[in-house]
Length: 566
Image (tube, rainbow, N blue to C red; front, side, top):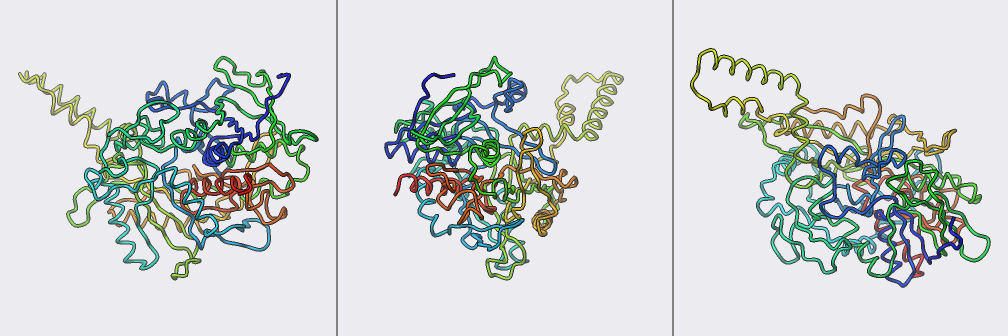
């Protein structure tokens, strides 16, 4: 144990959208800031690509794994989050959409599915603006080649036009702002061009503009994504913040005198799998910011609850997956030409466009809860995996190749050119070339509850059947999109098991106007504990609707104002 705990004005636990924004804002204001991040730094070129490297690319220190992906599994829901300097920005799909103004609902009576936002879009807009200036989003440059020929974007736009005719005034297609550099400011977009940085990134490595490889969700090895390590964390470090990687917080508590809070943590090592044997180190701070994500922050709050007897009873409540739904439009056909439709989901960024479906709150005649459906993509190697998974087709091609080869030898065919046969062995790639994954997200009912089970592990009480028909509405629209593309719709297979997979876990430490309604106030401060803030997706009292990263960052910027007394 350390004899003399190190002390900071602010300790921030986590380096995702909440932690990074607050780190920069507070360090810029002259505060002594330390960021504790459990994961490693991932400079351009360091993200796993080979099967050998990918096998170790998961977070489980007790198994000697200190990789990027942290996989959570509960009875009715699975989730994928990130462990690394920059948090979820390392693996998210780059979309920076603001929460719709009318979707800041305000309900009156706390209970199951209760959702009440103690702030408005107008209050968040200045913070959205400030975050946007730092993250530097650009829209997919569909007006330029080669971007204009991106098949999945063109297909999604065509499908949206068909839906707009069926639901006039209720469907809106757009190219959302993306935290991706397609071109340097004032210059036309060019794939693979050197990015000119006004401030050199903390890795000290060059970056290049988007190469349309669709590898956003497995880490961009070209530095094309404007991840938090390239902007907010770089600026925070230049302003004096200390960034500590492979450092995991175990506990924290208020102090009776001197500095307000004490923090206990460990430093991970590759050669130690017994994580309980790691030396426990200590630090103190005047202000504590918890930004470990919806699961991480809620788990730490539940685990350390005995040290905070005044915490709201809403701790653990309001969990949701931001309405995440996966669907597939398989083997599309152009209905005019009856030719296979080219979609090629491996070209572009993971998400290039979004289709917004109106909510009944919008007042345009829509029924039910609103949501977004976005085109999706994946790296090229997934195409090879998908084609190989077509066992019957692969066996058929192997059989045809073997028979043809035997016939050639029996007939003493003098040719040694096997190009045609080998080409046939590979198949036509029709399955992957003509299919489109779709990501849905929206106003799911936030009625989940996180809690600690009997052995002290995080558990979740959440069911799909409490959604008020939301998931059926999303899949119905996905089915309509597939129909417009002449494709067969395939629902996410895990849905048949009443499960969903989310990459946007939210809630657990919700905002509220008073302790009976939330764990923190509208400025992120924990009720009853001055100087203690939570700044991540855990504080959102309901779904965002679109991708939540931008809203989390805007809230953190607002919280920084409160801490600084601005």
